[in-house]
Length: 117
Image 1: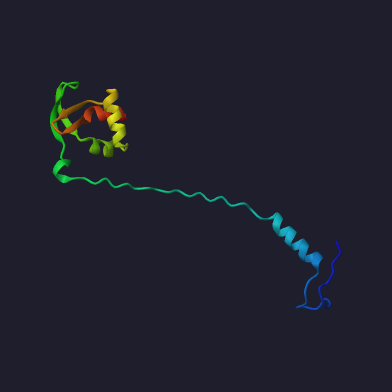
Image 2: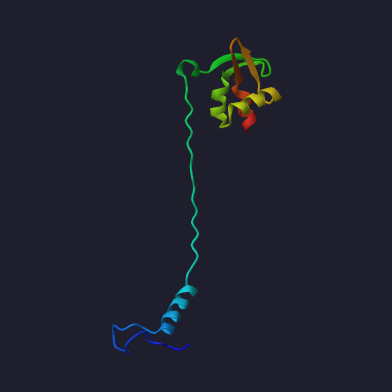
């Protein structure tokens, strides 16, 4: 590689030759390290709760043969961190116990915790 000065001579402040400049850039490129960046995103979900209906009910669970805490599907989904549709599917599949009351469905908290474990 031949050093060709851009202008002038070898006095300070004058431009360096193209060859030296190319060699310095090339040397810099060899020492570049790749950097890995990892991004973690946390999503918080809020579940609105109607406090008039939020309190769990005690009801008889036929499958458990005991009086147990029963919760509404919306609250069961918040406890299990799944969708209400998943809770309804578990009810349909018989994975969790339930009681149908006039106008609502109640899910057995004992069977819900067993399903999660």
